[in-house]
Image (cartoon, rainbow, N blue to C red; front, top):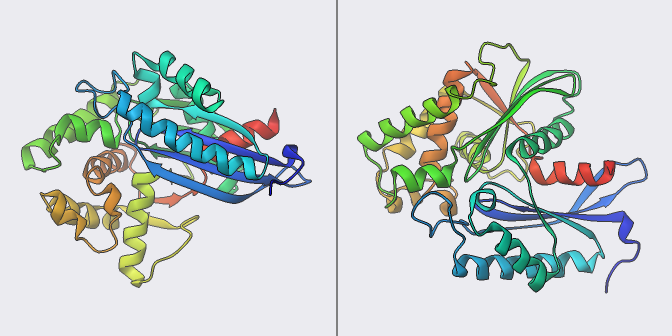
Length: 315
């Protein structure tokens, strides 16, 4: 049975490089929202392309359509208005226009391919809401599958919002194509990450901030491992949880020294679906800690999709 008054229900679909996410929210009278349903599925969009994310294969397109049809079916139970955004992998694919036209034809879902700066802005809006960061100077980091967004904001306003082409899936393809780690590949990967971030002249490195905030997969996976190892209990929510550089280095050492995927999958509290790409993600995160002199980072469970919801409400 579907729920009436679609203006009260919004659905945001985040078509990321590593996974697709859906959240469905109920809008409250004061303009805030409550998440009432969510779905996530790993897809690794563009992974069949040999050179970065140049093409979305027919197999990936088929998988994407299956996920999106399921997401739409769930959203339709609430008669929710849907907004779908696509990020790095779709942004860069040569056949992205054909892909989103096929999605529209087969599912009726209009997909907006958002630019990196827009993505970074939406992530910041989500994080700001989750942690009530309206009166602080914030460094916000989001490590995705294809790109990493770095945002500096103060009193709710953005100073810079940049998207760097280093992501957990992208760098795994580039440096660890068989998911086997080596000291040489690790070193090359670290050097590459540093070069890519430093080459962006709009990023301000020597800027003080009140709080460093981390969102999305890699950072939440790191936080979950650290927290669960300390308490030996699985927690449902990580929002507001912080970890420091020493704790990050500790789990990075453990994961990087498990050279083969099968070894990493046996590590306690690791997300098995992320064990293949987590080393690359952690290399990015460690390098960001180093470059920005971060002592500790606090988790925001809101990121891009919640930013999309806030944009829908504002519009």
